Image 1: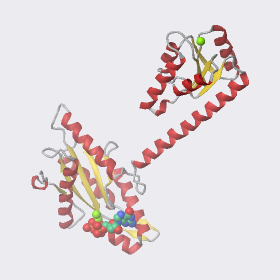
Image 2 (image 1 turned 60 degrees about the vertical axis):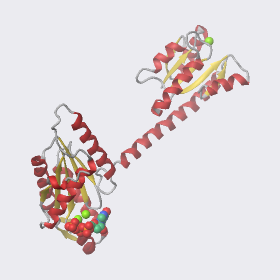
Image 3 (image 1 turned 180 degrees about the vertical axis):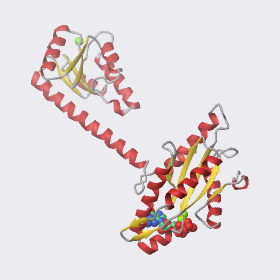
Image 4 (image 1 turned 45 degrees about the vertical axis):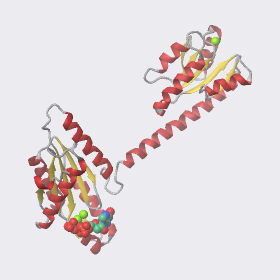
Length: 313
Ligand code: GH3
Ligand code: MG
Ligand code: MG
Ligand code: MG
């Protein structure tokens, strides 16, 4: 593990360097706080730091404060700081801890004590790593629908609005964004006939087939119970209809075999393309009107939103 030491006194610095190397640390030694702060700003900087208090150019307290200020913006950069000083009054200790030091050791330091304190620091850093990892997993899960592993409604809507904003900003203002709102036909019958768990399995399989049918850069989310929303960037109506047809075929071309029985399922879809409308919810609203037409028209079909379907308030 990498460790940074900043100590202006050459004898103490050398002693620390030798001791820490002996314990297996990869030591980076600096002569003052300024140099230490430079090292800490580099990528892959040490996360364990021993700072002398009194140093020329920038003292240990100032380095502490700078590190903590930076952490306010990103907790992933947490650095564990032990302040090393000849000062021994209690008031000094409070100043040091207030500046953001995690621990405090007076000089001349006791080797065994330093070793134990470093071990405590590493435990904290390990915990921090676990927390960061757990938070990443939670973040990722929050973006995914647990049943189908597709994006959630909130995520897909967020992406849609981003894509719409981006297409507005792009040099070529005409770059269209299309959406496809797709809904499984007579899905309630499947639940009624085979039960809710079978219904879930059908939803999962339909989602998998759709995911396979689209391009890797197209976004698909579960918009509601058995409703799915696709966001197609740089895709006009003709392209979106072609993709929607592919989805319909992918879902219906083979029966779904379940323990409860064999199910044949079809999909209806509504397509809407940006242009006059640049608002995510309005665009989805227009696709919904088209979807409703596809349902009324006999299901297992694709309909395109017309100008009238875009309700601009
Ligand atoms: P239509 O062709 O008009 O879309 O008919 P439908 O039966 O698919 O539509 P309807 O809206 O009447 O029924 C949707 C059903 O989807 C009702 C609801 O219980 C079911 N559903 C919604 N979410 C889930 C889910 O997560 N699992 C299961 N098994 N069923 C769900
Ligand atoms: Mg000093
Ligand atoms: Mg349905
Ligand atoms: Mg529905």
